[in-house]
Image 1 (cartoon, one colour):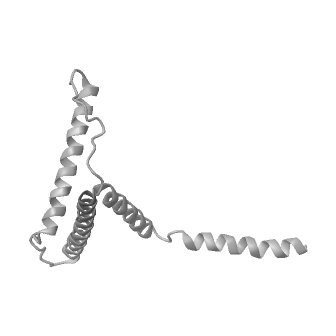
Image 2 (cartoon, helix red, strand yellow):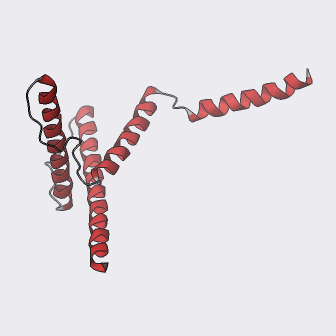
Image 3 (tube, one colour):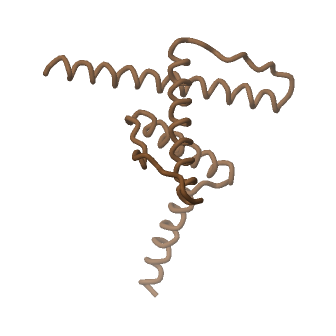
Length: 139
C-alpha cells in the first residue's frame, strides 16, 4: 500500500508533464510542424547547391525521365528561392495585399511574415558570404 501511495503520485506527475509538453490543439501541432519545416528549409537554403544526380541523365524510359525532371525541378526551385532571397535583400517588396476581411488579413500577415523570413535569410546569406571572403583573403 505504501508503494502504491508513492508511485501513484509520481506516475500522475510524469503523465501530467508529458501531457503539458504535447500540443493541446491541432492548430498548435500544425504551427510547431510549420516552424520546424521553415527552420529546415532555411538551413538547407544556405547550403551550396549540389544536385542529387549531377551527371547527365540520358532519357530512355519513364524512370530516367522522372529522374531528369526531378533534377530540373530541384534546380529551378533552388534558383527561384535564391532569387526571392536576393530580391528581399534589395528592398524590392511585393504589392501589399489590401485588407478587406479576415481572409485577406490572414494573407497580408502571411505575406509580411514571408518577407521578414526572406530578409532574415538574406542577412544570413550576407554573413556567410563575408565569412567566405574573409577565409579566402586569409589564405
